[in-house]
Amino acid sequence: MDEKSTNQHRLYIALVMVLLFGVIVLQYVCPSSDCQLLHIGSLSSRSGGNAIGSRGEVNDTGLSGKDPYVAEDGALARFVPRFNFTTSDLSRLVDFNIKGDDVIVFLHIQKTGGTTFGRHLVRNIKLERPCECHAGQKKCTCYRPGKRETWLFSRFSTGWSCGLHADWTELTNCVPSLMNMREPPKKPIVPSRNYYYITILRDPVWRYLSEWRHVQRGATWKASLHVCDGRSPTLAELPSCYPGDDWSGCSLKDFMDCPYNLANNRQVRMLADLSLVGCYNDSAMSEDERWAVLLESAKRNLRGMAFFGLTEYQRKTQYLFEKTFRLAFIAPFTQLNGTRASSVEVAPETQQRIRQLNQWDVELYEYARDLFLQRFQVARQQERRQAREKRQQERRRLRGRLGSTRLGIGWPVAMWPSNKPQWTETQAGEAITTHLRPPTPEMKQEREGGEAVEAEVQLPEWWGLEENSTMEDYMDNVEQWR
Image (cartoon, rainbow, N blue to C red; front, side, top):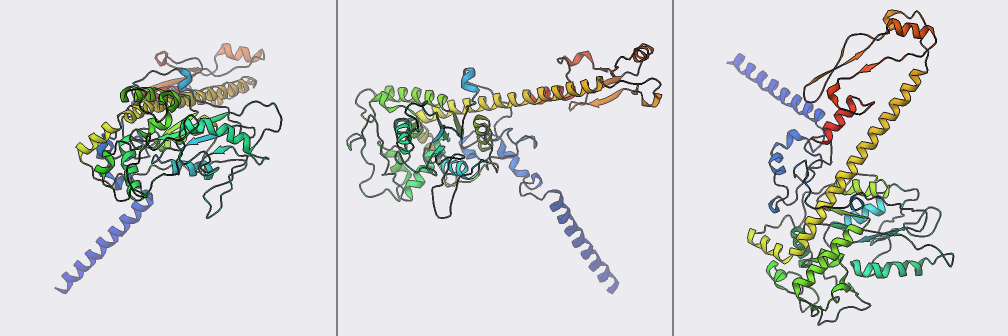
């Protein structure tokens, strides 16, 4: 019995040691908290990422594990466009001169993640002269290099200078005159400043729920001016949804039942030119006609903006901003999985009613998402094309250097290129052969005459690639259409 107990004790010790060794190996192989071995169950959440029930949960790493931009929202890796846009709409590249007079204007729509993006603008961009941010102060000083002039008009740089959460109508009428007053031109006649407007949009249903939770906690945005055509709306034009100082503790039903709630279709209203419909006077036309005009105006203004991002696509938003303005962020954006809105359990019929209340925002978001993803595709294709052209130029340069090297007579055979085929296997498992030809007698005669000789690379004809293309170019083309 003693010997048996001793053996069992030794067995237990061995099992514990094996377990500890396994944990150590696992931590070594997969130190990150995003280890896929620990998130096998998350694979099921990648399907249907565009549905309401998914709550916008995102895996930054993408499906391939290589490209962080692939299927960022859990949608299909290959995006199928629904809308037709012009080349100028898709190729967004602005000549932003931070050392000149250009200004970036951030239109901050409530509950779209604008606070996080606004902090990125003042704290996370690589600049020759970074913004000066001090603890305990909400605003940062964002001066141009060598000047005491600001290049950024936003909540965290200039404050709410044109009103709390000023919309497109307010900003386009307020910013130019305000900037000229704060920083008057040094010369009487100078070119007008370039104002580059940017914004962030969000899925309408979750944005609406997030605003309801914010109002429920006591937010009011009473300081918003809503200036249009030179004046704020009257109480008759814009009644209040609640009698007291705030609407704290309101239920979702009460929030949805108020016909004057500015949360309804907020994104369309804040991006449109309100003067086209008589501002907040809704007696000029029918409701459907009014919102149709506002929707088209919002789409037009969105296309004309220098940049816009989507809350559900943080990495793509960062990428397009960097490409558009030729500015680089220090740290990558993070796709947050959980928000206060995502913690709310909403019945399907309630979700459907929210979509009906925000039908114009839903249409705008689908339009914006399509434009956003098409812009991303165009930018990535241009990046790959430029990288391929750069590699080809480098190969031509190296080929020229090799061609200028004169090969002497009587080289040892061991130094000749091997006649053995060089095998390369593609990702599809196909074997491709390239032959490096050794010098022929004719080539030796040319060497005797002092001619430069270059080893020839022969590629299969079925590649169908352009001149000077290589296996790397072929794989680039394969990767582009996967």
